[in-house]
Image 1: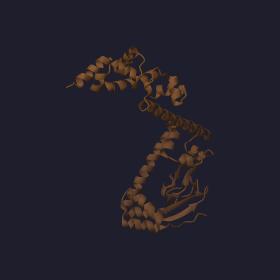
Image 2: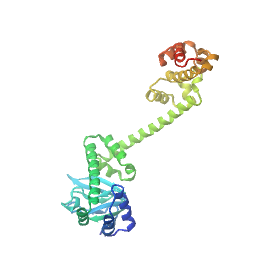
Image 3: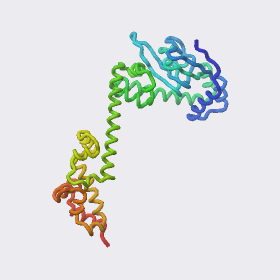
Image 4: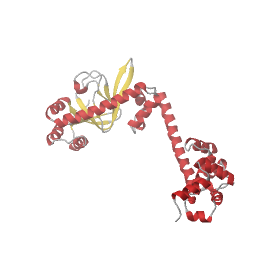
Length: 326
């Protein structure tokens, strides 16, 4: 049998801090909370409210997890799952006005703080701040519920899963997956499949990020582009990366083939040196190209025109116009 007892003052103060962050609470409302709030504990699997009963309390989950559950055509359906620091009550039977269409069941051993509907209604009649707070909470709940309902109705399994993990961080690692699957209106096998695909995708993203850092470090700091005649296989060996993966990253992340990717770094280096008049007094453009890794004059000119849109000579003239020598 579930027993209600007076809530400790520190628990009530914690709730008051949360509510006060939404809207300032009057001294009288705080005193009413201290007087009227109770607490209780429910074990995992224990039913707090049966279908058909009237829900007489508004609950706050101090620690644990609760779910709403109903039955349709002999199939049990999870309607919501709430965890620590969330309010919970019957959705269909809010304030005990009508019988609840869903049961409220503990998913974990749970500690709850609660207030009876009669006391809530009395506070609504007297305190504006209580009405305002409740309105804010109800509006947020219905926005979340509408969004959840929409994605479950029109989204595919992957979209529903991503919605859940993005809006409820940490839930998927904590809660029984068969309950999550029920709430998202999919079979457990489907949820497991989508979860595995998502994890593989995240792993692939992390691997891609790692190799991108390796690639850019080798270009910017080690200046690998200066190696004459370096090719994809050589570069892959240098990085310790599979050539196929390296090629895929260059194509899909950098939108470039290996030759243009390397030449782009070479030409950026040459352009930086061209902008320094002292460098241009001591080196020819061809010498800069050779130092940057180009194997021939023709390869350099062809690549420069392709990537810059001007020949090296034309580009130098634009620099002379922009930065005339005194």
